[in-house]
Length: 68
Image (cartoon, rainbow, N blue to C red; front, side):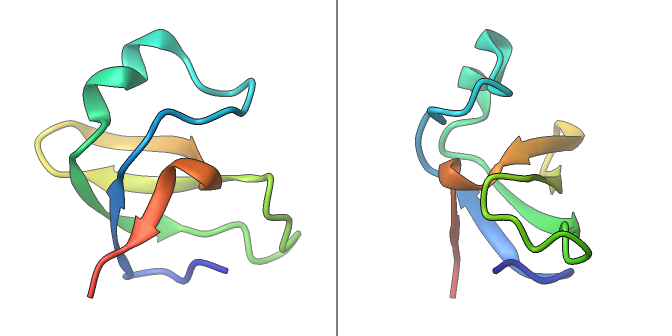
């Protein structure tokens, strides 16, 4: 489960239907969780990520991994 303020990397293309073609350019970028879906706590739910140099986007969780 992701928490607000955690640093993440978009490390792969998502298998989720919410993934759009333009999101391919985000692979390899780092960002910070700004709005995890803690109310639903659904691993398939989209989370809001502020991506360095690209703004804030809602992304599927399966494309994200935590950075140390």
